[in-house]
Length: 207
Image (cartoon, rainbow, N blue to C red; front, side):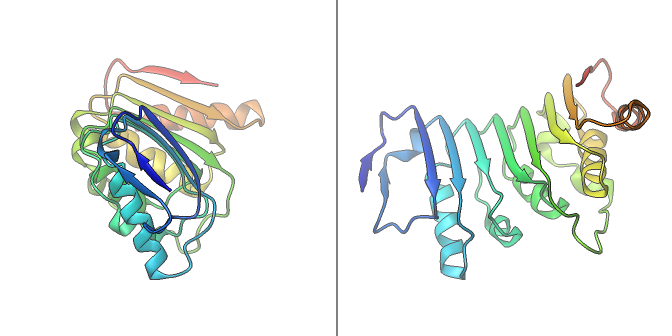
């Protein structure tokens, strides 16, 4: 399939990371909005390379919704630069800190980050990185809104919330959608998150 993407306004792709012999996008650098769902895990280094090359083709996007449920963490080691990206939604099991930091480092102009967290098991021997390691350019000076959906307060989610909110220096709005549970538990999670925020005058929404 050969697509002239020079006038394309949005792209919605679902499938395995395609080989260039199967799908070529000409002029894809101008696509402003992309939704990508890799529904098959790369099983080899060559397939991981195809993931990276495909992401490079859409790296000029300003709005990206990435379904990453089936992607191994190794795919994010070569995550390309998205220098024009202002809105990012990551959907799937919450990324470990190293992978999340790599994505944020590659999006220096990001303004809105949304984590649509699907349930998963917390990785064994999870080690919390130093908070300063998440002091990346977009969090220090660009990110104005952070949304976390399906927050249940497990070890990885709490770690990620702390790392993000402690370093989001210009945050203006945050929204956390809690999973259903006892009021006392939800209240405790809410107060904990509020204690991590360092930016002043933030609009706080808990649902």
